[in-house]
Length: 278
Ligand code: C2E
Ligand code: CA
Ligand code: CA
Ligand code: CA
Image (tube, rainbow, N blue to C red; front, top):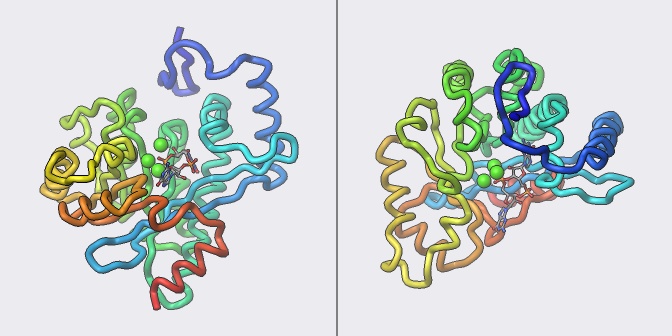
Protein backbone atom coordinates (compact mmCIF):
# COMPACT_ATOMS: atom_id res chain seq x y z
CA UNK A 1 0.00 0.00 0.00
CA UNK A 2 1.33 3.39 -0.89
CA UNK A 3 1.38 6.27 1.52
CA UNK A 4 -0.56 8.96 -0.28
CA UNK A 5 -0.33 12.65 0.49
CA UNK A 6 -3.24 15.07 0.69
CA UNK A 7 -3.30 15.61 -3.04
CA UNK A 8 -3.33 11.93 -3.84
CA UNK A 9 0.24 11.73 -5.10
CA UNK A 10 2.32 8.80 -3.96
CA UNK A 11 5.65 9.80 -2.46
CA UNK A 12 6.87 6.60 -0.91
CA UNK A 13 6.49 2.96 -1.66
CA UNK A 14 6.10 0.48 1.14
CA UNK A 15 6.83 1.06 4.78
CA UNK A 16 7.40 4.28 6.64
CA UNK A 17 11.03 5.20 7.15
CA UNK A 18 11.07 4.49 10.88
CA UNK A 19 8.99 2.61 13.49
CA UNK A 20 5.77 4.37 14.49
CA UNK A 21 6.71 5.29 18.05
CA UNK A 22 9.99 6.83 17.00
CA UNK A 23 8.16 8.62 14.21
CA UNK A 24 5.61 10.08 16.65
CA UNK A 25 8.42 11.25 18.95
CA UNK A 26 10.26 12.83 16.04
CA UNK A 27 7.11 14.58 14.85
CA UNK A 28 6.57 16.07 18.30
CA UNK A 29 10.22 17.16 18.52
CA UNK A 30 10.12 18.68 15.04
CA UNK A 31 7.01 20.72 15.88
CA UNK A 32 8.75 21.89 19.01
CA UNK A 33 11.88 22.72 17.01
CA UNK A 34 9.89 24.89 14.63
CA UNK A 35 8.23 26.82 17.46
CA UNK A 36 11.48 27.28 19.36
CA UNK A 37 13.77 28.11 16.47
CA UNK A 38 16.09 25.17 16.93
CA UNK A 39 16.94 25.23 13.22
CA UNK A 40 19.84 27.05 11.67
CA UNK A 41 21.08 27.42 8.12
CA UNK A 42 24.62 26.80 7.04
CA UNK A 43 25.88 27.97 3.66
CA UNK A 44 28.32 26.22 1.36
CA UNK A 45 30.15 28.26 -1.31
CA UNK A 46 29.89 27.32 -4.98
CA UNK A 47 33.07 28.49 -6.69
CA UNK A 48 33.13 29.55 -10.33
CA UNK A 49 36.15 28.13 -12.16
CA UNK A 50 36.17 30.60 -15.07
CA UNK A 51 37.01 33.65 -12.99
CA UNK A 52 37.55 32.43 -9.46
CA UNK A 53 34.79 33.87 -7.32
CA UNK A 54 31.83 32.72 -5.25
CA UNK A 55 28.92 32.33 -7.63
CA UNK A 56 26.46 30.86 -5.18
CA UNK A 57 25.81 29.65 -1.68
CA UNK A 58 23.77 26.53 -0.98
CA UNK A 59 21.63 26.76 2.14
CA UNK A 60 21.70 23.55 4.20
CA UNK A 61 19.52 23.11 7.25
CA UNK A 62 20.93 22.21 10.67
CA UNK A 63 18.92 21.11 13.71
CA UNK A 64 20.32 21.64 17.20
CA UNK A 65 17.87 19.77 19.38
CA UNK A 66 18.11 20.16 23.17
CA UNK A 67 16.90 16.55 23.42
CA UNK A 68 18.72 14.82 20.57
CA UNK A 69 21.74 17.05 20.03
CA UNK A 70 22.75 17.87 16.47
CA UNK A 71 20.58 15.99 14.00
CA UNK A 72 21.71 15.73 10.37
CA UNK A 73 19.15 16.58 7.67
CA UNK A 74 19.26 13.03 6.32
CA UNK A 75 17.88 11.94 9.70
CA UNK A 76 14.85 14.23 9.81
CA UNK A 77 13.91 15.56 6.36
CA UNK A 78 12.07 12.40 5.40
CA UNK A 79 9.99 12.40 8.57
CA UNK A 80 9.32 16.09 8.05
CA UNK A 81 8.03 15.18 4.58
CA UNK A 82 5.85 12.33 5.81
CA UNK A 83 4.26 14.61 8.42
CA UNK A 84 3.98 17.60 6.04
CA UNK A 85 6.04 19.61 8.53
CA UNK A 86 8.48 20.16 5.67
CA UNK A 87 6.06 22.80 4.38
CA UNK A 88 6.48 25.27 7.30
CA UNK A 89 10.12 24.22 7.75
CA UNK A 90 10.78 24.79 4.04
CA UNK A 91 9.17 28.22 4.22
CA UNK A 92 11.40 29.14 7.14
CA UNK A 93 14.42 27.94 5.17
CA UNK A 94 13.47 29.95 2.10
CA UNK A 95 12.71 33.14 4.04
CA UNK A 96 15.90 32.91 6.12
CA UNK A 97 18.07 32.17 3.08
CA UNK A 98 16.56 35.03 1.04
CA UNK A 99 17.00 37.47 3.93
CA UNK A 100 20.61 36.39 4.37
CA UNK A 101 21.58 36.77 0.73
CA UNK A 102 19.76 40.10 0.54
CA UNK A 103 21.83 41.33 3.49
CA UNK A 104 25.02 40.36 1.62
CA UNK A 105 23.92 42.21 -1.50
CA UNK A 106 23.28 45.34 0.51
CA UNK A 107 27.00 45.50 1.09
CA UNK A 108 27.79 46.40 -2.45
CA UNK A 109 27.75 43.20 -4.49
CA UNK A 110 25.04 41.42 -6.44
CA UNK A 111 26.65 38.04 -5.96
CA UNK A 112 26.36 35.30 -4.83
CA UNK A 113 23.02 33.75 -5.64
CA UNK A 114 21.31 31.55 -3.06
CA UNK A 115 20.44 27.89 -3.69
CA UNK A 116 17.68 26.35 -1.63
CA UNK A 117 16.72 22.67 -1.49
CA UNK A 118 13.06 21.95 -2.14
CA UNK A 119 11.12 18.82 -1.28
CA UNK A 120 8.48 17.41 -3.61
CA UNK A 121 6.00 17.67 -0.74
CA UNK A 122 6.47 21.43 -0.83
CA UNK A 123 6.33 21.59 -4.61
CA UNK A 124 3.05 19.77 -5.03
CA UNK A 125 1.52 21.49 -2.01
CA UNK A 126 -1.13 24.18 -2.30
CA UNK A 127 -0.05 27.56 -3.66
CA UNK A 128 3.66 26.74 -3.75
CA UNK A 129 4.44 29.19 -6.55
CA UNK A 130 2.57 32.00 -4.83
CA UNK A 131 4.32 31.30 -1.51
CA UNK A 132 7.75 31.54 -3.12
CA UNK A 133 6.88 34.78 -4.89
CA UNK A 134 5.44 36.20 -1.64
CA UNK A 135 8.67 35.43 0.23
CA UNK A 136 10.73 37.05 -2.54
CA UNK A 137 8.60 40.18 -2.34
CA UNK A 138 8.66 40.18 1.45
CA UNK A 139 12.46 39.93 1.60
CA UNK A 140 13.04 42.22 -1.38
CA UNK A 141 15.18 39.67 -3.20
CA UNK A 142 15.02 39.65 -7.00
CA UNK A 143 13.97 36.22 -8.34
CA UNK A 144 17.13 35.89 -10.46
CA UNK A 145 19.20 35.61 -7.27
CA UNK A 146 17.27 32.54 -6.13
CA UNK A 147 17.91 28.98 -7.30
CA UNK A 148 15.66 26.10 -6.27
CA UNK A 149 17.29 22.66 -6.12
CA UNK A 150 15.11 19.70 -6.95
CA UNK A 151 16.14 16.04 -7.21
CA UNK A 152 15.38 13.81 -10.15
CA UNK A 153 13.88 11.13 -7.94
CA UNK A 154 11.19 13.56 -6.88
CA UNK A 155 9.93 14.52 -10.30
CA UNK A 156 9.02 11.07 -11.54
CA UNK A 157 5.63 10.79 -9.87
CA UNK A 158 3.98 14.05 -10.83
CA UNK A 159 5.99 15.39 -13.72
CA UNK A 160 3.26 17.50 -15.33
CA UNK A 161 2.27 19.31 -12.16
CA UNK A 162 5.88 19.92 -11.16
CA UNK A 163 6.88 21.05 -14.65
CA UNK A 164 4.00 23.53 -14.65
CA UNK A 165 4.87 25.02 -11.25
CA UNK A 166 8.57 25.24 -12.01
CA UNK A 167 7.84 26.89 -15.38
CA UNK A 168 5.78 29.55 -13.66
CA UNK A 169 8.63 30.26 -11.26
CA UNK A 170 11.11 30.24 -14.13
CA UNK A 171 9.00 32.83 -15.98
CA UNK A 172 9.52 35.10 -12.98
CA UNK A 173 13.28 34.60 -13.25
CA UNK A 174 13.88 31.98 -10.55
CA UNK A 175 16.69 29.52 -11.45
CA UNK A 176 16.05 25.79 -11.27
CA UNK A 177 18.83 23.31 -10.48
CA UNK A 178 18.62 19.58 -10.91
CA UNK A 179 20.34 18.16 -7.82
CA UNK A 180 22.16 14.82 -7.41
CA UNK A 181 22.33 14.20 -11.16
CA UNK A 182 23.59 10.71 -11.91
CA UNK A 183 22.64 9.22 -8.57
CA UNK A 184 19.57 7.47 -9.91
CA UNK A 185 18.43 6.54 -13.38
CA UNK A 186 17.52 9.61 -15.33
CA UNK A 187 15.26 9.76 -18.29
CA UNK A 188 16.66 12.60 -20.32
CA UNK A 189 13.41 12.99 -22.23
CA UNK A 190 11.61 13.52 -18.93
CA UNK A 191 14.19 15.97 -17.68
CA UNK A 192 13.97 17.99 -20.87
CA UNK A 193 10.39 18.82 -19.97
CA UNK A 194 11.54 20.68 -16.86
CA UNK A 195 12.76 24.29 -17.12
CA UNK A 196 16.17 23.47 -15.69
CA UNK A 197 18.95 26.08 -15.74
CA UNK A 198 21.62 24.27 -13.72
CA UNK A 199 22.81 20.67 -13.48
CA UNK A 200 24.47 19.51 -10.27
CA UNK A 201 26.61 16.41 -10.86
CA UNK A 202 26.35 14.09 -7.89
CA UNK A 203 29.29 13.37 -5.64
CA UNK A 204 29.22 9.68 -6.64
CA UNK A 205 30.29 10.75 -10.14
CA UNK A 206 32.99 13.09 -8.90
CA UNK A 207 34.40 10.31 -6.71
CA UNK A 208 34.95 8.20 -9.82
CA UNK A 209 37.36 10.72 -11.28
CA UNK A 210 40.69 8.88 -11.18
CA UNK A 211 44.17 10.30 -10.76
CA UNK A 212 44.71 10.21 -14.50
CA UNK A 213 41.98 12.16 -16.24
CA UNK A 214 42.37 10.31 -19.55
CA UNK A 215 40.93 7.19 -18.01
CA UNK A 216 37.45 8.50 -17.40
CA UNK A 217 35.79 10.70 -19.99
CA UNK A 218 32.23 10.07 -18.74
CA UNK A 219 31.97 12.94 -16.25
CA UNK A 220 33.53 15.21 -18.87
CA UNK A 221 31.00 14.09 -21.46
CA UNK A 222 28.13 14.88 -19.10
CA UNK A 223 29.55 18.38 -18.60
CA UNK A 224 29.81 18.94 -22.38
CA UNK A 225 26.35 17.54 -23.00
CA UNK A 226 24.74 19.72 -20.33
CA UNK A 227 26.58 22.85 -21.46
CA UNK A 228 25.58 22.00 -25.03
CA UNK A 229 21.94 22.48 -24.09
CA UNK A 230 22.72 25.70 -22.25
CA UNK A 231 22.93 24.50 -18.66
CA UNK A 232 25.31 25.73 -16.01
CA UNK A 233 27.13 22.76 -14.46
CA UNK A 234 28.12 22.44 -10.80
CA UNK A 235 30.22 19.53 -9.53
CA UNK A 236 29.28 18.44 -6.01
CA UNK A 237 31.46 16.87 -3.34
CA UNK A 238 34.81 18.01 -4.78
CA UNK A 239 37.44 16.95 -2.24
CA UNK A 240 40.76 16.60 -4.08
CA UNK A 241 43.04 18.62 -6.33
CA UNK A 242 43.03 15.88 -8.96
CA UNK A 243 39.24 16.17 -9.15
CA UNK A 244 39.62 19.93 -9.45
CA UNK A 245 42.17 19.57 -12.27
CA UNK A 246 39.89 17.22 -14.13
CA UNK A 247 36.89 19.54 -13.75
CA UNK A 248 38.96 22.50 -14.95
CA UNK A 249 40.13 20.51 -17.95
CA UNK A 250 36.52 19.80 -18.91
CA UNK A 251 35.46 23.42 -18.30
CA UNK A 252 33.02 22.67 -15.52
CA UNK A 253 31.36 25.98 -14.54
CA UNK A 254 31.35 25.66 -10.77
CA UNK A 255 32.52 23.41 -8.00
CA UNK A 256 31.22 22.82 -4.51
CA UNK A 257 32.92 20.67 -1.90
CA UNK A 258 35.13 20.32 1.12
CA UNK A 259 38.22 21.15 -0.98
CA UNK A 260 37.12 24.79 -0.86
CA UNK A 261 34.78 24.93 2.09
CA UNK A 262 32.39 22.98 4.26
CA UNK A 263 28.94 24.47 4.82
CA UNK A 264 29.49 27.47 7.13
CA UNK A 265 27.35 29.26 9.70
CA UNK A 266 26.00 32.61 8.46
CA UNK A 267 28.65 34.80 10.09
CA UNK A 268 31.53 32.77 8.63
CA UNK A 269 29.85 32.54 5.22
CA UNK A 270 29.51 36.33 5.24
CA UNK A 271 33.23 36.72 6.01
CA UNK A 272 34.09 34.24 3.27
CA UNK A 273 32.07 36.12 0.66
CA UNK A 274 33.56 39.47 1.70
CA UNK A 275 37.14 38.20 1.65
CA UNK A 276 36.70 36.42 -1.65
CA UNK A 277 35.24 39.47 -3.39
CA UNK A 278 38.07 41.81 -2.43
P1 C2E B 1 22.40 17.77 -0.91
O1 C2E B 1 21.39 18.78 -1.33
O2 C2E B 1 22.94 16.88 -1.96
O3 C2E B 1 23.55 18.60 -0.18
C1 C2E B 1 24.91 18.29 -0.26
C2 C2E B 1 25.37 17.51 0.97
O4 C2E B 1 26.72 17.11 0.77
C3 C2E B 1 25.36 18.33 2.25
O5 C2E B 1 25.08 17.44 3.33
C4 C2E B 1 26.80 18.83 2.34
O6 C2E B 1 27.22 19.15 3.64
C5 C2E B 1 27.54 17.62 1.81
N1 C2E B 1 28.83 17.96 1.19
C6 C2E B 1 29.21 19.10 0.61
N2 C2E B 1 30.47 19.02 0.12
C7 C2E B 1 30.90 17.78 0.41
C8 C2E B 1 32.14 17.09 0.17
O7 C2E B 1 33.09 17.60 -0.42
N3 C2E B 1 32.22 15.80 0.62
C9 C2E B 1 31.18 15.20 1.28
N4 C2E B 1 31.34 13.94 1.69
N5 C2E B 1 29.99 15.82 1.51
C10 C2E B 1 29.86 17.10 1.09
P2 C2E B 1 24.00 17.83 4.45
O8 C2E B 1 24.10 19.29 4.79
O9 C2E B 1 24.13 16.83 5.54
O10 C2E B 1 22.61 17.63 3.72
C11 C2E B 1 22.17 16.36 3.31
C12 C2E B 1 20.93 16.45 2.47
O11 C2E B 1 19.82 16.91 3.21
C13 C2E B 1 21.06 17.43 1.30
O12 C2E B 1 21.77 16.82 0.24
C14 C2E B 1 19.60 17.69 0.98
O13 C2E B 1 19.07 16.66 0.18
C15 C2E B 1 18.96 17.62 2.35
N6 C2E B 1 18.74 19.00 2.88
C16 C2E B 1 19.61 19.82 3.50
N7 C2E B 1 19.03 21.01 3.81
C17 C2E B 1 17.75 20.94 3.33
C18 C2E B 1 16.64 21.85 3.31
O14 C2E B 1 16.70 23.01 3.77
N8 C2E B 1 15.47 21.39 2.73
C19 C2E B 1 15.38 20.14 2.19
N9 C2E B 1 14.18 19.77 1.65
N10 C2E B 1 16.41 19.26 2.17
C20 C2E B 1 17.59 19.66 2.73
CA1 CA C 1 21.24 20.30 -2.84
CA1 CA D 1 23.30 17.16 -4.13
CA1 CA E 1 20.05 15.40 -1.98
